[in-house]
Amino acid sequence: MEVVICATPDEVARVAAAKVARVLRDAGPRAVLGVATGSSPLALYAELAALAASGRLALGEVSAFALDEYVGLPYEHPESYHSVIDRTVTRPLGLDPARVHVPNGMAADIAAAASDYEAAIKTAGGVDVQILGVGSNGHIGFNEPTSSLASRTRIKTLTARTREDNARFFPTLDDVPRHCLTQGLGTIMDARACVLVAQGEAKADAVAALIEGPITAMVPGSVLQWHPHATIVIDEAAAAGLTLAGYYRETFDNKPHWQAYAR
Ligand code: F6R
Image 1 (cartoon, rainbow, N blue to C red):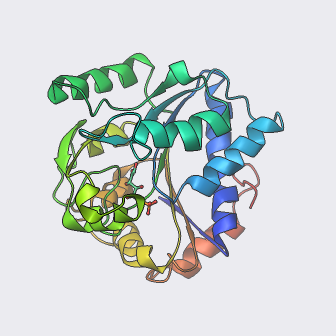
Image 2 (image 1 turned 60 degrees about the vertical axis):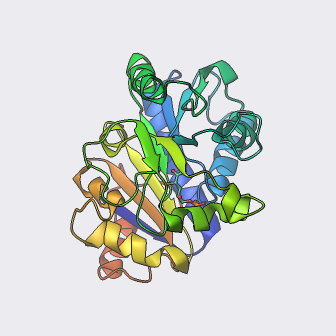
Image 3 (image 1 turned 90 degrees about the vertical axis):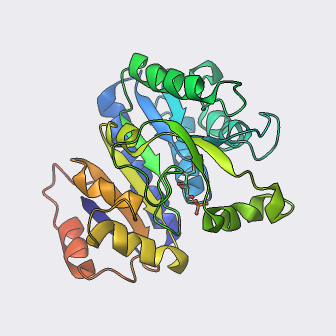
């Protein structure tokens, strides 16, 4: 696991974008990008959009797969992840909407929608780089604590904590859906690289548990310790609970030139 501690949230976005851009370029024009919703990756998407707009990153043929979607929230609802991905990823990055996929939380047969989503990822050749945030309870995607570390795309019930965390996007807590369709931890682990971003002190406990705690279904993001190419990019506040912060800084500052990427 590569851990990069940045001075500011802006630097988190720049470093993470540099990492994602490098993997996308290496994967070629038809690369497959995994995208998360939520606040954490917004500045990273803005950086990728700027790279694309300046011609330094070609995204026109790139496919994208979202991690998750609420069940029963119509696509046109502004907080459906279909809408959020369209607003924050597809349009700013200039992706071809036909190549952008979000799980179908409105399907009559949710189990079939889940297996169709797995099949679509496979048909696209698998995800080259998966962008992730982390919930304050350690979830990635909507894999809540006690999710199987081998899970695939399926319906999950959101915890009270996640619904409270996401209530800021809805008029009232009661409006936050209770169920979601999410890629599983096994699905996420199939991505060839993962880049997780986290900012702020509210994430410090989850970040410390994910990076330095035991691998446990109680902290679903800790499964990334088992991933061969996981990069965690965090600001100082989110890094506050880390025991080996000095080592992570030293490692990043002394990378061999062929491995280094810009801050
Ligand atoms: C959403 C997702 C979630 C979020 C997490 C953090 O697609 O994958 O795991 O990344 O809930 O959300 P924010 O970034 O809003 O704190």
